Image (tube, rainbow, N blue to C red; front, side, top):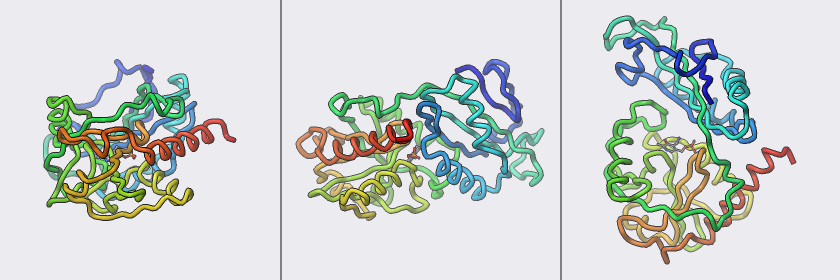
Length: 284
Ligand code: PMP
């Protein structure tokens, strides 16, 4: 797990060096992706690359590398299996500190791996219901860009931890946007509700997959506004992310969600998602 990729080279993590004048370090002038590999295969890799390219274009960072080639090679060098790959592209090293940048800068590209649990190997009954708090969404207004400016997310997830909670759900202008590192779903009378895609949320790869699986399996869903009352009135609340799959939230702001147990529709979606993942891993 020790080999990283930096600007065209694969090298041991402790040999990787980045300039303090790198704009990613100075300004958070950079974007990223986190992509799980299960049994050595990228999970919705093309979708992750498309989102990376969206982020790069939106902030005008150059980047037309063979992303799949770079990441596949990194995973192989780290022994394959179940790994989460972190990929960061900064605008590059300006050599000095200036807000204004030279459009010709060579981007800094860094990638590393961390272990990840494949959710297909987890039994439904072993999944723990999460505890969440709701707090103000203090982020900028381009949350569709996967920027490394994560200070608001960091402060708020720490606030959750201070309250012995696992995740913070964010509220902007009275409406639920998403979690600090997840998308959010509310179930009411068998229908899944989730905020519609906009610049206020990250277009989660797992969010798309959940909606796709709902569609294919005759489960009704609606992309719509969700206010605090609607969130608290949910029979079930879920969060989703690529590394965690779909997880049930059973307590919000100290109140049980529905009957306080993991819900039946969550269990069904978890099963659909794990089946999808298993199929991808075994090629069946
Ligand atoms: N929203 C935010 C703010 C996130 O950081 C993440 C995790 N990348 C998600 C949603 C979920 O996205 P994905 O399903 O692509 O992991």
